[in-house]
Length: 276
Image (cartoon, rainbow, N blue to C red; front, side, top):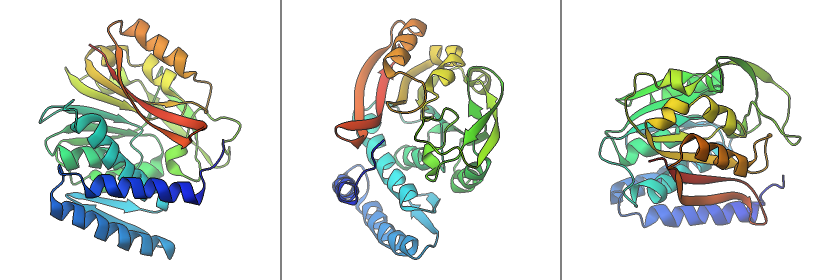
């Protein structure tokens, strides 16, 4: 997997800056607050310090440029993929599998304050930050576990960038510093939910296992937003989509998100799928 160059990262950051600067669904004071906070965050991170990034009611503790970049991309992507096309109502039920430190959940609450969200994160250390970051939101529940095909446990291989940690490593992933995590089926986690507006799955190569334990969850979900890992683990994106079609015959692709990685060698891509 080839790394993105500094020039490409700068270009992506500038693209996201423009997207937020001209986003009329965010009040002007929120946009101003965002760029003020970003400048302060970059200054703190360059000195090796953490930074509490406050935007709206969010208070996200960022430890790295990656944390900050993921927050910004989640804000832009949530708006472009879900809010702008009016895919969700005013009080949707959302399941965030692979919540990391809460970037996607915070983006959802930024645009839709009445959203009810279940955030699932396996890494105990990352989960601790997640719980602090989004603990102040109403109607948000955090669960510390991995989602899988059956209950049990698994080794989570922590990567330098926490968003890349995986239970299904590829040859490019480090196998250092693994941690044993609890595995639960989504069907168990969502047993008390009668209707789910959107199920978001970002699990770094373990998508097949997650869906295998989510048959009932999928049947009561309207939308699935899944990050297809194109170069990690053993999951073949085509096989995953074929399995989903067998599980939910009415499923159909609504939209592809931005591919991540080099244009000639993307390593993942969001796909929004209607299930009904």
